[in-house]
Length: 333
Ligand code: ATP
Ligand code: LTN
Image (cartoon, rainbow, N blue to C red; front, top):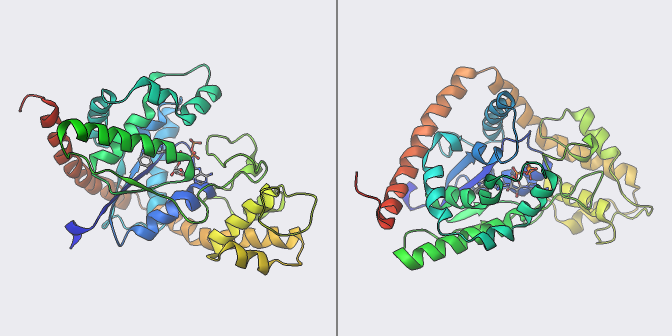
């Protein structure tokens, strides 16, 4: 029965077109899990405001991300896909949870430290409390499982700590959520800088990032220019970050394990290997791109999906929010 299924929640910022890291680290699992769980997938536009955004671009990217969710294979009749800013419960619960989170905990978050460095002229309070809004997202839907990439592990631990702290005071209000990482691909590195994670908001070197809407020629070009090393062995090893990253991408894209990928390229040069990784990526990206293009031409359909899903998300979030408000002592309405 639908109501007996466990609940999944996850989100992505509309800060740019998703890349291979976002896909292999998170989105791929979202699709894989949609039949066995009740899934809620959010476009976390409120989180994006922690870094300055052009309003027109943000609005366009948010819609494109929703279309991409559908193009990847998420069924909008089955899963809930919606914009965070359309459900006011996120902000309302975040306020309450802010009062159960300590400054010291937030100050220890590595993403906060990194983003403060990158945006030294705009270290705003939202950037600091970002993980509390993320905790509110998850707890608002009573999620059991949260499919994410490795970089979000620390935020998940904080979310669990906040939920446990709240439950210790008020009784069993929140489900304590578990993170869910992919076996291969939880941390995809840049192609040009394989010691740093591939990141949307790090677009200085175009060859570093493969976007899901990149055209095939451009994908092959990026893989051909990927940094490897002065050796010639296609082998997974800590002293070969470039080759290891390409092996990870190949394994995740082709659905084989690392050992199988290594033996497929035994005795072959880096040139052949890079071309094959590019082709494996194009193979799964192609159908996503063609569905995305179709959706771009069907505004009425996308609008209808947005309206229907907003309603479902608000209904689910509203029930939980009222429960929490009652627990903390807000007067009855
Ligand atoms: P930004 O650079 O704007 O912070 P981002 O590229 O880090 O964006 P997010 O929107 O923050 O992407 O993340 C969306 C999801 O993708 C999260 O679950 C995150 O863990 C995952 N993810 C992001 N980058 C990678 C990566 N390089 N490898 C694997 N997973 C990733
Ligand atoms: N912080 C996440 C995005 C995010 C999220 C969430 C992920 C916001 N709220 C809730 C999972 C569950 C990131 O990827 N940077």
